[in-house]
Length: 113
Length: 114
Image 1 (tube, rainbow over the protein chains, first blue to last red):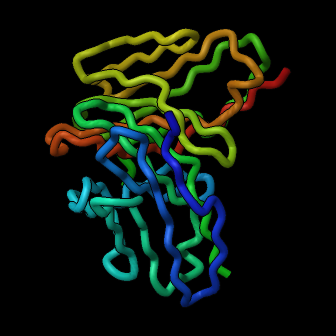
Image 2: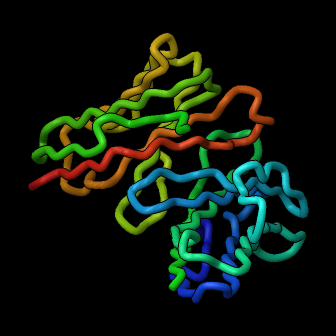
């Protein structure tokens, strides 16, 4: 049973480009969370999605960031017109319904030059 | 501001010693969880303790929760070099809509020396 799969693991973008990060949850999990981690810091909640629905996007920056979890395919975190401050590790996690723990992927590390 | 804050920020011990990490939080919680993160890797869930529980064990791990003090501790007994990692506490607030919106602290970096 594969865990949460994230790709790419590492992504380098120049300022102004777009970054797309993908996440496939564990089999049987229909809930996806995205978190961002800056160096030497804890994870900050960004968004919580179920299939085809954004449930809680209270942690998403108001501009340039968007997320989706389509009926088919992985969840996508999209960052438009990246800036140096977007450089971070972005983690996806999934969970089955009605349980407490989250299962995390290995993260996608974005570097903006 | 962060909900959870770990103490100490960094801890260095010898193999075989016990490691204790503390977590304080600010508001009422539904549950509190501890996660481990090896350098450059994702987080691994260790233990979940609910607000009506006071202590839980899992192998060499012992977690306590004191809701009156809004604090939790993680004890790792008989530490090994492989325990070297960052440890994070994370809380789930009541009335979170029934989903696991975790609020993380900044973590404790544990180094266990052979």
